[in-house]
Structure formats: structure tokens, C-alpha cells
Length: 341
Image: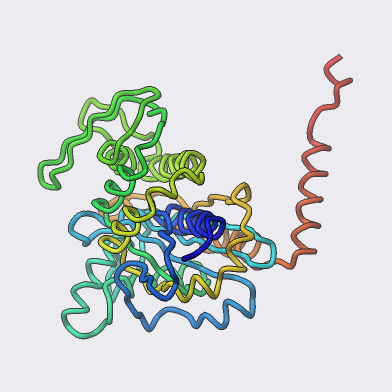
């Protein structure tokens, strides 16, 4: 069996990769030869991992899907830079407008359309179409994916004992069609799996109830803040006692092409990740109403700039230089003690 220290590192690794990737998880550490991470899926649109090793970058697309698996409410691209030990996460709004076939669609519908194409024999997995669209938007390779449904999210949160979180306002929403009923009070409270699920799913209230002023963009910000709280509270050795239960949940609810052997291969890359340097980003763009439908139109120029500035791998020396320049810029922008006199 693996040592306690290795188990702690493995648990930490999976928390970063799956929680940031889409809404939850921890790696259950056993002998690598005995491990399988979720249901193993192979997709041709994914990029060759050898390229990732050459450029020092590993990109994992995480999808959080609804109960029917036909909509992806959460789409996050988690990028690990093995040279500088940075992790950057790009959230892609579910309403992002993309061309599928001859028609424009919201990107969150691509997994459902992908499922239909699988039945026709045109695709190997429902996620393949979403992978293709995210690659087209970002210009980045995608080496791995992980799909988690919200039943799995609720179970994992319960296994971890819930999360303490301050709900910003009363959240009230009822949708009988989806069997989605959200009723959360404002304030600091302990969220169990169901309450945490309701919080990350909430976007707008019923008529007369409050919602996020920025709609889905507000929900993305809330999801990212929740994930930060989850990581800070649960990334501790005490949760090693939950390993077997977490492993069972991952086996039941996660679809991925990432294997235990991949984790063993990437061990030296991932174990050096600095959790304090995990940064959240959102796809640049703006919301628009087109033909009566609400879309998010991403800005191609600003997206390219973000990818170049943040998601391009850096050498350790380049990263240290950039961090020095940031620190110097912040210092020069801060008022001196005498300025307040």
C-alpha cells in the first residue's frame, strides 16, 4: 500500500483536478495498479499527451452535467503549467454561442447534441462535441476530460461533511419541469450536499425574487468562490479517512479518459502545484439577446490575448520575472505611508 504521505498528496491532487474541474472530488489512493478513475472513455478529438509533456502544459476539461446528462451547467478548462507550477481555470458560460452544424446553439446543449450523434454513429462519446467547441474557442489542446453529474456532486459533498459558506442573498426558485426547487436563506451556514447543489445551480429567482444581476456570469463567479471555500476547508489530511467512500462515489459518477497510470506518470508534475497560485478566469465577452434568445458572445480578440498572457506555458525563469514585475507594479501603485500625512 502507498505511504501516508503519498496518500495525502494524491488526495490533494484529485481535489484540485476534479473540484476545480467541475464541481467536486478527491482522489482515493490505493495501489495504482488497482485503480480506475470513474468510467473510462476514449475520445479521438483529445490531443496526444506527448505534446503536453513537450510544452509543460496539461489541460483537463471538466463538465458538470444536469441529472439527465443533456446539459452542461458547468464548463471549466483546468490548465496545469508544469514548468511554473501554476494552475489556471477558464470558466466558459453555458450560454456561449457556437455554431453546431448549420445552426447556432448554446454550448451547454452540445453534450446533448453529442449524445444524439453517438446514437447515429457519428461520434464516439457525448462529450466529444463540447471538446471540439472548447478547442475552437480557446485554440488550446485538450488532453483529458472529466464529466460529473450533480448526483455525484451531492454525494461527494455529503461524504466530506458539507461546506460552511455565506449565501449572499435569499435564493428562491422553483422549476417543476426540471424538478428543481431551491430555497436558501442569506447568511453564513453549513451546506450539505443538496444545499450545495442548490447554491451552485442557482442563477435567477422566480418573479419577484432576487437573482444574480449578471445572470449566468454572476453564477460563474459564485461557483468559483464556492470552489475556493471547498478547497480551503477540505484540502486537509483529516479527510484521508473518507478515501474509500470518495473512491466509491468517483467510480459511480465520473466519466473520464484519465487513468491511474496517467496520474502515476504525472505525479512529479502535479505534486509541485502551489494551491495558492490557482487562478480563476472567465471567457471574455458579453451577453446579448439574438432572435429572442439570450446568448453569451465571446470576444475572439480578448480571448486570444488571455490565452497568450495566462495559459501559455512559462519557464520557471520567465514566471519568476513576471511575478517580480507584478510585485513591483503593485508596490509603485500603492500609496506610500507619507502620502496619507
